[in-house]
Image 1: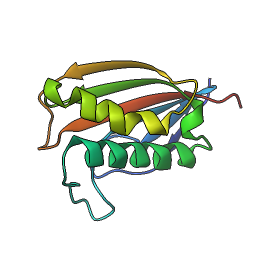
Image 2 (image 1 turned 60 degrees about the horizontal axis):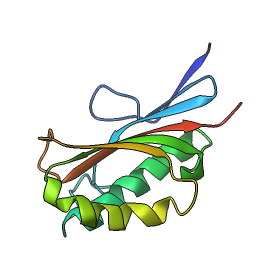
Image 3 (image 1 turned 180 degrees about the horizontal axis):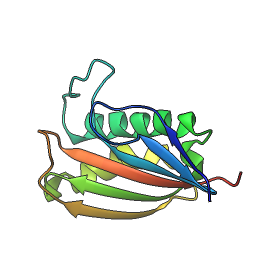
Image 4 (image 1 turned 90 degrees about the vertical axis):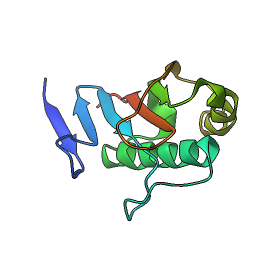
Amino acid sequence: MTRQHFGTSHVPLSPAVRAGDYVFVSGQVPVDRDGKIVEGGVGPQTRKVLENISAALALAGCELSDVVKTTVWLKRAEDFAEFNAAYGPFFPKDQPARSTAESRLMIDILVEIEAVAYKPL
């Protein structure tokens, strides 16, 4: 199976990797193009993370509708309802499978999300 790597990062990872018909998107965080963390709570941060996932998917010729699985880490379990309110509109139908956990995150953010997309070559 051939692998393709897409994008660059300031840390040792590929933003997206295609392996066969699957595209794996590394955990995305709520930072803008300047590397600044988006403020305003878990809602705005979730929207930015999903925009960053969309951009990483685009590098591999995919879109959010191709996502079949996401894994979500929330800093605080009490943000779950606000997170869901922000997350839902990005997947209006045929929502991907999802795991969500409360976790200490590597930087001072409220949410991180990784994704797996399926798009046959």
